[in-house]
Length: 99
Image 1 (cartoon, helix red, strand yellow):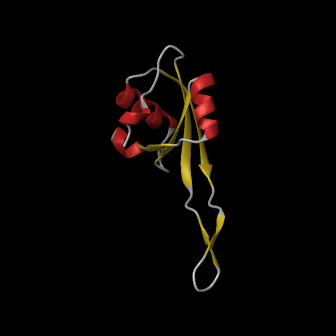
Image 2 (cartoon, one colour):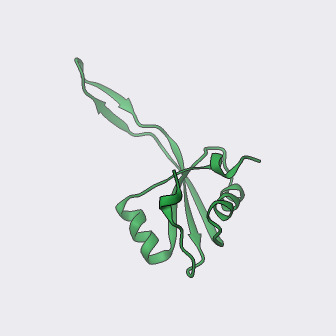
């Protein structure tokens, strides 16, 4: 089993994820591609000391992006795995502790 620091890569901070944090106590993280829901749940519980109610995962596919330079080319963003973690409503995660 991997260490929790290897499973949770970074929090994802967007307008939608901020709304989910405030309204539904759902936090969004980028996780390792081979991490399972049980490993993610254990990592969040270990790193932040909160009770995890639910874990939803999805793989975000790469998107085509324009790369400028001498010649106009196209490149791709990287694919990554995203986890939306629902925690107990009475608890909170301080995201400033994360890398």
